[in-house]
Length: 290
Image (cartoon, rainbow, N blue to C red):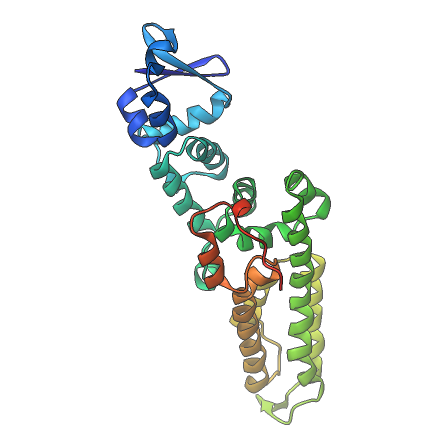
């Protein structure tokens, strides 16, 4: 057994499991005379740690199998990942990464199917500077009030700058959508629906009003635009005009998702982001400059 001491709380852990799963502890106990020269507790070597007891309590539940890293809630995941990353428990860290991949998938279709709040997980991505999840995390955080997000980036000024750059790009999604889509409705339409003339001009103002509400409410544009794709009927707007709105909304979402890494100056696209990542932290990756 090995006794790990965090904040004066003693954790008794099986020595063989510890050195099997952690590169750091394996190296620590491989040093000549390390175990015999260590502090002893009840006849077992002890190691004093600078971590919180709360982090280790959460971690050991995963370490001993009572919880799975792939199903952790954000508060617990944050604690587990701190320990797993610091002491290089690679298997558990990979499980944490798979959990974050569930929350921050790299495809728009999977993103649409995420049904849990992403904000607390975004804070984890920022804390650990996980590059491949960074576009999704920054997108999530960019929708919050600036005063609140600054606190998250207090010791990460370079990332904060990228957040603000991306925030402007997100607002521009709405402007581009309106200019590419709704101006065509202002020209009117000669089609009919249910025996009535198409109300393209009135449809323009209806859609613009909906966009305005989404912007005012700080609604995420990629999610809000999905309403235009799925179902946002305007009475007496012909099928042709409705289909055009839906098609352009769908194309806008697809193109903007593909460009998400570039919006935050992280990479040109998802493929380049993955190549840059390589399992490394954000700190070791040069910033992308468009």
